[in-house]
Amino acid sequence: MAMELVETIEVGSGGAASIEFTSIPDTGSHAVIKFAGRYSNLASSQIQITINGDTTTSNYTYQLLRGSSTTVSSQSSSNTTYGATMNENGDTANTYSNVELFFSNYASSQIKNWQMDGVRSQNAAAQTIHLVAYKWNNTDPITSIKFASTSGNLAQYSTASLYTIS
Amino acid sequence: MATPTYDLIDSVTLSATATSVSFTGIGSDHRDLVLVAQHSASSQSYLSIRFNDDSGNNYPIAWMAGVSTLATSNSSDSYDRLLFTQSYTNTQDNQWVMQILDYAQTDKHKGVLIRQNEQASGYEHTSATASRWESTNALTKIQIWPNYTLGSGNFTIGSTFYLYGIAG
Image 1 (cartoon, rainbow over the protein chains, first blue to last red):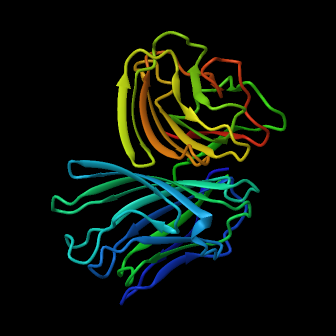
Image 2 (cartoon, rainbow over the protein chains, first blue to last red; image 1 turned 90 degrees about the horizontal axis):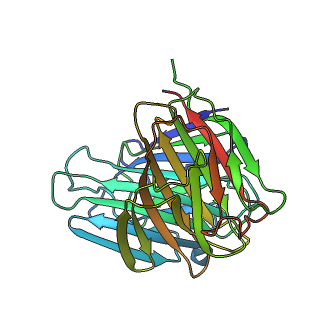
């Protein structure tokens, strides 16, 4: 009974369109992903999160609270896209956004809710923190989680680690 | 050598409705506690949490929240419980994670951090709450009610509560 590492995925040379955990075991009560991500372009891309291959945007809703410089804002949407900025090409070198996702009861027959807390940090005024509530309106156990950029690639050395908590 | 973390102390999955959920007899075997909850309730109200049956004004709270397009925050030093809003659907749309730091230490007040998310249609919000239990007693009991008026509402069937210990 503990928090156990299931898998770590690191993006290799040249970047990658996505990171995906597949065949996630149902042996835990909760799942945690720690994600260090950066975009390889300057397009202010956003992260798309796809659960079990479900790309129907109306099956996802999120509520976002964001602090950016001196501005705090909130928004909600029905979308697979994480409504938050991440570090991108042009930001301070070697900076990767840190994001933690906590999925409670991920293998259960309940509707799936999770929280995502993340930060874009760099040596500039444009620094951002996000608190997000997310919902996948489905009772199936979560068996795969995919991160992708809405445009361009995830940069080399972007890393995601999946843990389960029993 | 890896440090043990997220040791499951106890868990509750409701097979019948309940007016409150309690974890009692919590030992001092860990440094911090983490409580993971996913639930719904019979009415929309404030979720209430007390430690060691303490009903004094010993729970100062500061919080911030995003509700639709509204970003808001507030604080008060006079609550007699931890509290935040929760939903009343039957789909366990209220999800939160509470950390209680140094819960067994008798030389300091107990820091509390809560990340809460609610996705019931029409009540969507996300929030972060910081609190402090103004007591130097070791924490041995956590009780959670689904309503501000204690005992007046129910947690629904299928609601889940997990209490973990974090080694220190």
